[in-house]
Length: 130
Image (cartoon, rainbow, N blue to C red):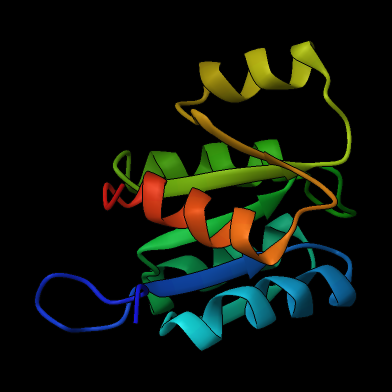
C-alpha cells in the first residue's frame, strides 16, 4: 500500500473538480493504493468551505471551475494553511496559469488527461515519498 504515511495511517485526499468523472478517475487511481478520500468538491468555493473541517494531506485542484476557479480556491486555502500540499490539474499547458499558481505558492501540476499510475506517482512525489 503506497498510500500510507510512515506511521501507517492513510494519506487523506480531497479531489476538487467540476467534472464528477475526473473526481471518480482520481479516486479510482488512488484508493486501490491505500489513499483515503476525505472529501470532494465540484467548485472552488465548496472546497474552501470544506477544507478546515476535513484537513486533507493533499488536494487535487482543477484550474477551470464555476463559482470560484481553482487558482482562487488554492490561494484561499494557502492563506489558511501555507503548508497545504496542492496539485493543480489542467487540460491546458498555459504558462500564465503556471506562473499565477506559483505566485500563490502552488508548485505542483498534473496535466489532464492523466493515467492512474501518473496520478499515484505525482501524489507520492508531492508528499515527499519519492
